[in-house]
Length: 319
Ligand code: UVW
Image (cartoon, rainbow, N blue to C red):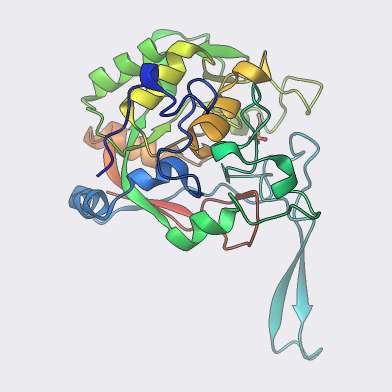
């Protein structure tokens, strides 16, 4: 098993930009921190299945509506295959893999300071043209599959219990000290290779608001999320999470103040760590609040789209 360097010791080779994890799993690696989901860890994660309760994490494909960032609402048609109302297919038009619940794959956002994607991949690998390749395509994640032990930090419930004015639809930076405190109070101890899920309470607030986001501008909506800072990057890397996800649309506080210093740029481009967004965590969080168990088996089957950028997670947690 690879012994991972600490954040302060990144990169492993001075030829790479500071604080990147490039090269750790080889220069030809397309999976980044998902490499931490070893067979041993997956097997061990199955020991968390005690009740047989299943929690799917895909939100409605049509939400949020209107979509954020100029994305499209899926346009669904039923095709009558024989024109005799006996056999039907689905047809999806305008399907953007990132309108609803999603994994941001490693083609989504580059390490802004170097303008390269994870493992030193340039944008011309991703765009059509003479240098196009399949590097970092979402199919790599799909063909491997994602499974492991996940832990939920229900920051939203913890925070709401302390602050009746808490509003996840307003920009606010969550410091890692607060996540540590939530973990402590929930009795969660992190393990290397964990899938970290954070429920900020954004989706609940969104649903309660009837989908009326306070921001006029759907290209720059407001939300709570983790603080984008060196301290956060160090905390995330040094726990050696396999990936992170939450019920918010960006995982980090939004709008992003400086993309060079954003979690998107550092996690995706710097670490090769997929980011899960708008995961539906409501029923899972209710169950965890009732039984006090915040760890479980997590599985996710990304769409096997050759050279894709992102994917609905098709994730399921089993307790
Ligand atoms: C942001 O870029 C903030 O969100 P997404 O990952 O959905 O593009």
